[in-house]
Structures are given as structure tokens and as C-alpha cells.
Image (cartoon, helix red, strand yellow):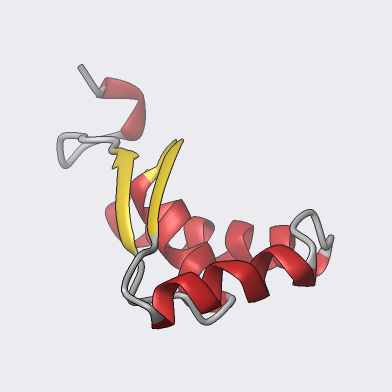
Length: 81
């Protein structure tokens, strides 16, 4: 899978998660309030680019994020160490 294909899949998946409303609006409001006060750190086992795309989509793009990251060679995601 090319990097650009992966990035597109990440954005699409984040949009689908939001569309399915797996995160309640109340949770986003609480997180946004914490972010405004400078206290929001998101820690997740989700892949970093997916988590960042999700946060961007719900308006929390400035949140500090600690997440896992997939590192791949130029050939394929399946050849990741």
C-alpha cells in the first residue's frame, strides 16, 4: 500500500467513525473545553495518523497526542517490522 493510499484510508476511516457517532457530542464538548484551557492530552492505542485525523475532524486538531505509529518501508504496509 502506498503512503498516499494509506493516508487517504486514514482520513476516510476517521470520517466514517465520526459519521457512525461512536463518540458522543458530549465527549467532544468536554474535550474541547479542556483543550481551550490547555489541558487536553489524548492517549490512544490507535495509530497516530488515524487519531490525528479523527481529532482534526471533530475540531480538536490542537490536542496533544500520544499514539502508536505504523512505520513502513516504501514498498508495502505488509512489510513493516
